[in-house]
Amino acid sequence: MKPVIPWPPELFVSDPAPLIGVAERLERKGGREVVARCPSRSDADQTADWLLDRFSRLAPELPVTATVEPGGGQFMVALASGRR
View 1 (cartoon, rainbow, N blue to C red):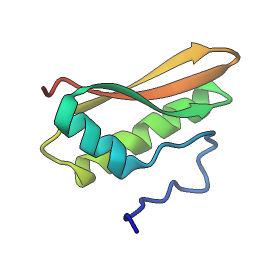
View 2: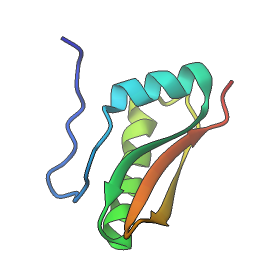
View 3: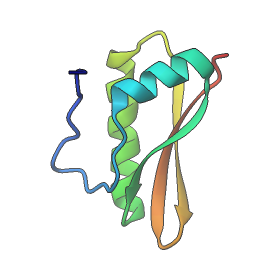
View 4: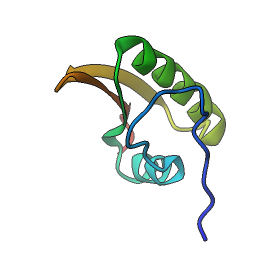
């Protein structure tokens, strides 16, 4: 059974990605990955802030940025790394 990092219940997210897998892929390949969908910009901004804090501890050597993008009546939160 793989370890799981729980998403906090106070964040309003849909389809949250398993963060350890996201970290592994970003470390290995770099690039960008959508990790959650949120119903409002405020929820997405809070989620992006939480993700940056979480990744600073989960993978401190991995430089990541978070973006919030509108689409389809919701907001996508993505993480990106320039690592290759």
